[in-house]
Image 1: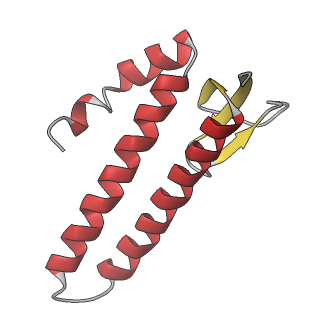
Image 2: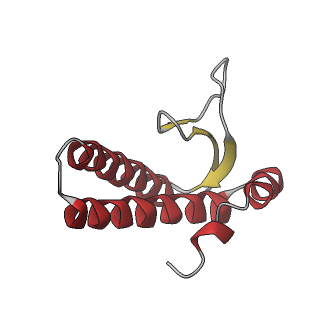
Image 3: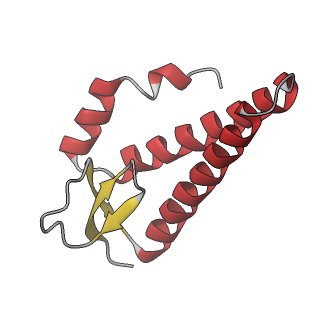
Length: 107
C-alpha cells in the first residue's frame, strides 16, 4: 500500500490530507490501514477521557477512577507512539523534544 501525507491535530483528533488553513501538530506518512488504526486510537483515547470526566464527578470512587486514568494513559501512549512511528523527521524530533514517550516508560 502506498503511504500518503496527513496532518494531525491531536487536541480535536483531526486527521486530514490537505493541511489548508487548519492548525496541526504533526505531519505523518500513513497507509489506509495505518490511518484507520490511528483513527481508532483517537476514538479510544476520547472515550477514555470521557469516562475519566464521569468518574471525576463521583465522590469516593478512586478505584474506578484509577483504572480509567490507566486506560487513558495507555491509549495516549499508544497514540503518541504511532504518531512517532508514522511521523516525518520533523514530527519525530518534535515528539522527542516533548519527552512525552519518556514520561510513559514503565507503563
